[in-house]
Length: 49
Figure 1 (cartoon, rainbow, N blue to C red):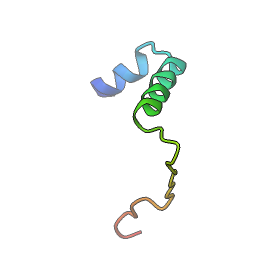
Figure 2: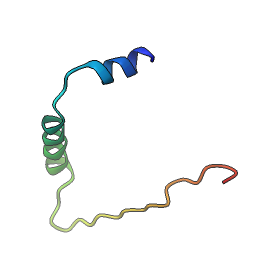
Figure 3: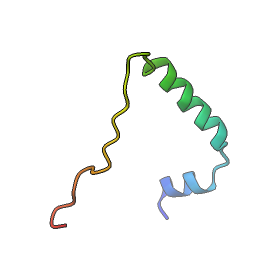
């Protein structure tokens, strides 16, 4: 396990608090009454597959 994985796996953090921070950021910076959401499930295909 590398240092970054150890930090993420062993450090205490609150998933609900992180969700709230992300939601607040999105509402402040991305919310618009005329906006639409486009979800593209195709992503980028891996080479050779």
